Amino acid sequence: MKSKIWLSSPHMGGTEQNYINEAFETNWIAPLGPNVSGFELDLENYLGGNKNVACLSSGTAAIHLALVQLDVKRGDEVLCQTFTFCGSANPIIYQGATPIFIDSEMDTWNMCPNHLEEAIKDRISKGIKPKAIIIVHLYGMPAKINELLSVAKNYNIPVIEDAAEALGSTYNSRKCGTFGDFSILSFNGNKIITTSGGGALVCNSLDDKKNTIFYATQARDSAPHYQHSVIGYNYRMSNISAGIGRGQMEILDKHVALRQKMNTFYKESFKNHKGVSVFQEYTDKIISNHWLSCITISEVAKFTKEEFQKAMNDANIETRPLWKPMHLQPVFKNTPYYGNHESESLFNKGLCLPSGSNLTDKDRERINSVIACFN
Ligand SMILES: *Cc1c(COP(=O)(O)O)cnc(C)c1O
View (cartoon, rainbow, N blue to C red):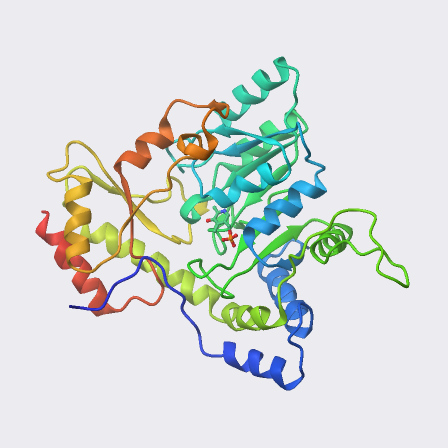
């Protein structure tokens, strides 16, 4: 059996180990230390725009602390893109609030500004003004940010930008992860860069960053003893994980370019396949990091999604359905939803394909030979 070709697996650059060794040599094995502040500085420099970054244990924790700081609590409602991974939505429940799911537009597959406005008007007419909006750049594709931010601004609702999949993507030349009142990043094992597990909250002020770290380290008051006036969390990133992150920052741009190259590879491989389209930027004002390359297979294609998936699987090549929309998840049944089944139709006809920066020419040959069979 040939070795497995994965969708997206960790890809070390080589210098990560040096930062970890340094942490061992100086005995900084704690959830603070020079690698944590070094990684935060690297991210601030990379993102631009004078941001203040707090590194945390996961992207999900980052969304949770954004909600905490926006004072989302029991009885509140939070608008959330339905076409996403559950990490975007679960923290709304942690706060005892209710998610309101908003469907996608078909250009970027992200939150539709019209459905967003429709939902806001309807919730307000029902007597509850939503407390926050969680927008996502799914698969690294930048959402329609100007349109979404303008709706949010009209109704004065803060925005949490979930850029977990979009580190290295840009919108009008500005980096994704810099557009929200809070923005979040993820360094989980399958993301653009990894710290084995981790995330970050991107803040607009130093005060917000300090407050984030306060909540992430059990909300300890300044007192000579352990004193707590509010509930905190154990969400800080460790100095070991941050060491991996610092090494990964050195090759981030290179790895983004390699993922974009995978997208180009798929455009070429599928160019003669009727009814198959490779997901790509609809305008040149956005650039996707192409974290995962995706295709949709329509009824006019000569083969079904299932047939293609089976052939790939037989060749030991991983594929995966697109994210199943949150409003269709058993755990979120009966949750309010605004849309017209756009994400459901994408879910039904779409697939994610191997997209890692560590794929080789040989891997691409194997993938291409399966794709060629379907022409
Ligand atoms: C991965 C991911 C998250 C959560 O990040 P973790 O670090 O895994 O907790 C949130 N939102 C999206 C869109 C993601 O892909």
